[in-house]
Length: 144
Image (cartoon, rainbow, N blue to C red; front, top):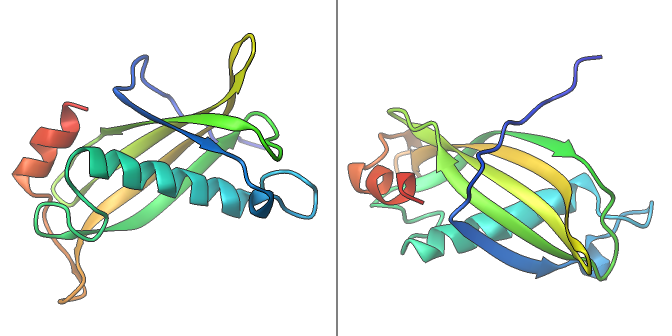
């Protein structure tokens, strides 16, 4: 079976730290795929806020997720503190990719817990249609 492989850059200029809550756990007692997506959504929102944006207000348009890929590396458990790094890449006319690196903070350093990629498309929610990425967004996020 072919596995998803996500190539990450060497450097990320944005990161946030979150703690795994009991509500993030599934019936197996660890973070489920739905909670992993919620964690990267929180990191995405913080990344956008650091540039003066929100998911529904990014240079005059909104964002909608077009696709997602996750590469799980380590089980996450209640109380784990994770560092989630985010960067923007792959800009085209209608959107861009966000790459995420999730690491568990441990006494002896960081341990990779997962990688993710979300394809983000610019979207006009009032017209219900795709729209071009504003140039100001590319300028701000490409430097992150």
